[in-house]
Every structure is written in C-alpha cells, then in structure tokens.
Image: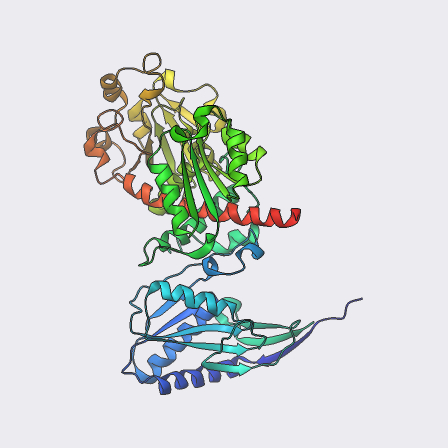
Amino acid sequence: MSKPKKIRTILCAEDIRRTLYRLTHQILEKNPVSCAIALIGIQTRGVYIARRVKSIIKEIENIDIPVGVLDITFYRDDLTVIGPKPVVRETKIDFDLNDKVVILTDDVLFTGRTVRAALDEIMDFGRPKRIEYLVLIDRGHRELPIRADFVGKNIPTSQEEHVEVKLKEADGEDKVVLIES
Amino acid sequence: MNPEVFPCRDKYFEQTMWQRKDLLGLEELSPEEIRQVLSIAESFKEVSTRGIKKVPALRGKTVVNLFYEPSTRTRVSFEVASKRLSADVINIAIEASSVKKGETLIDTGRNIEALKADIIVVRHGSSGAAEMLARHVGVSVVNAGDGWHEHPTQALLDIFTLKEKLGKIKDLKVSIIGDIAHSRVARSNIWGLTKLGAKVTVCAPKMLIPPGIEEMGASVTHNLDEALKDADAVNVLRMQFERDENTAFPGRLQYFKTFGITQARLDKANKDIIVMHPGPINRGVEMSSEVADGVNSVILEQVTNGIAVRMAVLFLVSAVREEKNETIN
C-alpha cells in the first residue's frame, strides 16, 4: 500500500504578502523610479505575481508600471515530449520593451528551462536594457546556468517532491505547499 | 484575447486532447476538436502582430506543399504559416515534377516521406485523395482541398472569422450562396458550422444543389432574398467556370441577376450582415465590387485569419505525429 503523501505548508497568505512587499522593495532599491521598469509575468501564476508587484509599486511610489503576459509554449524545448496536449495561453506585451528594465516574474524556479524559453521570447519582442528575474520560490535542481535576482524563499527539495503555489486569483487562496512523495 | 469570444480557453484542453496525425476534413472532427483549433489559432494570430513574426514551435520540421491544382491563397497561406512556425517549406510545383512522368500520388507521398519531411499539405482534384495519401504515409497529411469533398482549413478560417466578428457560432444563421454542388468549401463549412450549433442555409439554382445536402444539416432555398433575410452572415462561393461551364451553369450575367450579391440586396438584409468569400472573387458574377469592398465584407480579414488557423493545424498535427513515432520506436 502506498504511503499517504505528506503535505507541508511553507508559506501562508500573510507570508506571501510580506514576501512580495520585500521583493518589491528590493526591485525599487536596485532600480530607482527614474528608470523605466516593466513587469512581464509568465503564464499563469507569474502573471498574478506581476500584477501584485505592480500594485505594490503603485502603493509605494505612486507610479504605474506596465505589465505584460507571456506564454512560453511555442518556445519550449520539450514540445515533442509534452505531445499533443500543449496548453496555449495568451501572450500580450502591448508596450515597447526597448531600453526598459524588464522584471520577469514566475512562481517557482526549478530546472530553469521555462526562463530560457521566456528570455528567447522576450528578445523577439524587443531589446530591453536589462532583464531581471523574480520568483516566489526557488526549489533548486537547475538544468541550465540560470539564477534569479529576487527570490522569495529558497526551499531545498528532492526531485520527487512537488512545490505547489496557490494564489487567490487562480486557486481561491494564497499558500505555498511542499508535497512529499 | 477577448475573453468573451473565447471563454474558459483552458477548459478545452482539459476536456479534449488532439490525437490526429492528419487533418482530412471537418466531418470527422468533434465540436471540441474544432474549438481547440480555433482557440490555439487565437494565440497564433497574436504572433503575426509582433515585430518578429515568428515562433520556434516547428523549428527543424519540414513542411511540403504538394499542390496538384492551382492555388495562390491557400498555398501562400500554408507557406507563411509554416515559416512563422520556423519550419522549412518546400513547394512542389506539379507542372515541373515527376508527376508529369506518371508518378502516382502514393509514390510521390512515399518519396516525400523518405526525404524525412514531417507534414504534407496536399491539394488534389480527386475527392478522397488526402485521405488515401494519409493511409499510405506515416507523415502528417493536411488536406488543402480534395475535389468536391472538403477544404477543412478554409472552413476553419471562415468559422474563426465569424466567431471573432460575432462572438459566437451557436445559433448563428449562416447562408452559403453559390455553386454548392462543386464546392468543398461549402461541405466543410456545413460540417463545421452545424457541429458548433449554427443554422446553415444553402442557396443556389437547382442544378447547383447536390442531392442529400439536407442530410448534412443544411436547409435549402433557391431564393436569394430569402437566404439573406435574417442571416447573420453570408458566405459567397466562387462560380467555378473552369469545371464544366457548358453544361451545368447559367450564363454569368443571368447568374449575377438572380444570385449575385449587390448592395441593393444587402440593404434589405440585416445591416450588420457579415459578407465572406473564400476567393478568388469573380467580381460582377457572385457579388458586385461595391459589396466585395464594402463595410460588410471581411474577405481580407479571412485571409489574415487563414494564417493563424493554419499555424494552429500544423502545430497540432505535428505534435501528434511526434508522439506516434515515439511509440513505434
């Protein structure tokens, strides 16, 4: 009989709120308001994180930062592996990327392959001055030489474990859990 | 993306799974499969608005356009679609090929397969040609028109355009006017539209209505004003004079008088009626220039949407073929 899976809460709603405030302050510390910042969220939870960071920046600095939405499906390196059920969501970057500091946001950094695809896709939209990368959770196990600039929490995991980020916008609650196999 | 036009897009993917190596016609597709193509096409439409109009989804894949009949729009559209997916495209002009020396369709297909192509886009004068080719080759086959049978990507782009313009397909009243008997576009449109819940009326002189069309779910009229009345959209077919002008067709002028779409006739219809035509247009035969270039016409938008729809089809079939190959190996 298989053992029941252990589920451990890593961040609660309040932790996520504080973490996003801290990360936003870090972004603003590194990139003074005078430089043009844009946020791009990777579908789907990276988009919600980008929108939250946008509203925190609005609250702190009273400026509006454009938010783009990126679906990396057409840029994946495993299209042939995921087979006939590719989930394709919207990509929408309706502002000029050239010379902007782009903050790319996602929920979990794992192998780094998603970021690789996202970087390629962003380059096809323009030439940002710089791209910085924000993640809520870094769970390790990189397969590419990629690191995040702003990390909410580092969580050492095993390959078999699963990190699930739940956000109100998609899941009805804010929570990060580690599911042990 | 307009969420009202494409609600709950992800739901389609959760419910359905594209498993077809080939796209041969709309008759065999389920409503969910049709919606899946339309939904992915919406994402691909955005790609053509980018500065760099290209994504690497089909990088390293080869698409062969095998056209046994003349075509500008469809062949170029498939070529542009393939290139925007980063695939390599080879166009085989039948006039300059070994077909002239008597090579059969199956042999040509097998040779293309031996060249390690991934997708064959085929247009052929015989109904069922694409299906036959698909049975004999392992590569994906996309039907770009076979005889009087089907032209699935044309119908998909017509439906995509309608959905984009009117927000839905269900319960729409769509009239197809013209040479229904010889039209693969009409057949594919009837299959696709009725599967998605639209009401289809076909309108033509008696001799151009094939027997059994009602069994496909379409109603028939021979009166153009009746077909236009209350219609949300009208899809006007080209008179195919090259097929058998002497026997089946009324004269061009007589046809225009009875079945040609003019502004005066449109004025009596729903003022927002959508006018579509798969091209090429015989101006002054199926419709007047005033209508073809008028405010109700979406003819050029159909051409633009054709690229997105064909990108979606190529993308879906190529992914399945890859999977099947892996199982075999």
